[in-house]
Structure formats: C-alpha cells, structure tokens
Length: 263
Image 1 (spheres, rainbow, N blue to C red):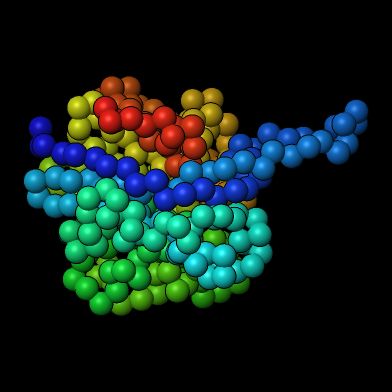
Image 2 (cartoon, rainbow, N blue to C red):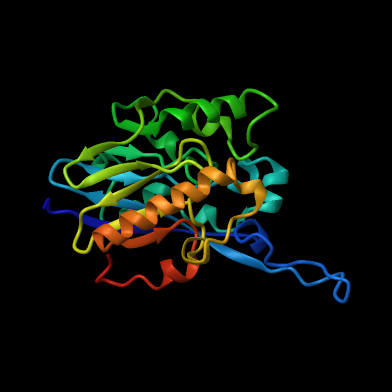
C-alpha cells in the first residue's frame, strides 16, 4: 500500500435552500400551504492528496470574488458568503502547502463552486484531470443556452494543461478515479487507499442522507436521476468491499466533525 496522506481544506460555506440538496425537504400541504423553508449552510472543501509520486489537489473551490464574479441569479440562490476569506493559495498555506507544491489537479467536475481556483494554474504545466464527458458538457453549457447554468466559462476557458479522463483510471498508485454520472455527466469520485480507505463521493451525494437513505437531490441538481441512482449503488458496493469511509460533497456536519485521525 502506498504511503498516502490526505489533508482537507475547508473552503467556507454556501448558503442555500435545503430542497436543492434533499428533494422534498419542505412541501406545502393543504393544512400548511406556506411552510417555512430551511436555508442551510453547505460546506465547500478541497483535498490535498500527498502521495510518493505526486501531490494532488482535488478541486479548486469557488472564485474568491464569487459575490461579484458569479452571475447575480446564481449567487442569489447559492451564496458563498465567505468566499473572499478563502483564496485557494491562503487555504493551501494554512495546510502547509503552496500552489507550486501541487503536481496535479483533479477536477471532480467544473461547477462554479469546484472550478473557481483554476486560474492559479493558467499558463503552467500542472496537469488538470477532468472527465471527457464533463469537459464536453461544461463547454456545451457555457457556450449555448442549453445544458446547465452552474458553469462559469471564465473558470475553465483558460490556458490549462487538460488531461482528459476516459472512463476510469488509476491516477497514481493508491488513487483510483471513478466515473459517477448523475449530478453531471462527467463527475469523478475516487477510492484512495489510505488506512482505512477513503471513498470520495463528492457531489454524487451532497449530504449523508442522499447516500445512506437514497434521498435524491432536487431535480435542478440532477443531470440524470437514473444515472445518479446507478452511481450511488456503485459507490455503496465499493464502500462495502473496501470498508471505506465516505466523503460527501457538501455535508457541513461531516466536515466540521473531521479530526486529526481522519481519514
């Protein structure tokens, strides 16, 4: 087993309606036609996966100027309220790393809260790994009126050293990339062979209840609900076979509960 160290970077909080993450959280009824909605914090995080071969950054978070950089309707719905306090370089430094220490970046997908720090790697030879289907869909969405509005073109339409992942692959010894379509067509997760193994579910499951209880995210966060269910079953099989700990996409309770023994 490779000697792998995983550090989590807490990149702040997005505030949004819980119905986006857990479909049907709040439902109007005849007896309660105007229920109170739950406006909750969503954790934003990145990982530094330090291996003997490479130091890998998992995702790059939101742009620090999200409040003005993101389209107004998106920020109004998904407000990254402390993005300006979480520049990627600063959060890496707090964890003992610098941008120049990063040998490779894996973009789980290219939504605005995951790809906003890619500008740090523009014009460098740092490889940026992304799934083929994700890169296609991001550009399709950004350059047309179809697709998804959650992609900000200036996050990823840059001079970057793209390394396109086809299907699934081993990135380095001890880090296996998994294709998990559902939230987007090309979302990536990973099985990291720490002790115990770490299973990165990411935005396949925003909160633990999505994963454990098979509660779907809201329709606006699902590119394909059937593909999402199949990816969920796949992850649960990997978890069972490897005895892995699972890391969810935006679960504040999980992120705030991580201690020095993690993972």
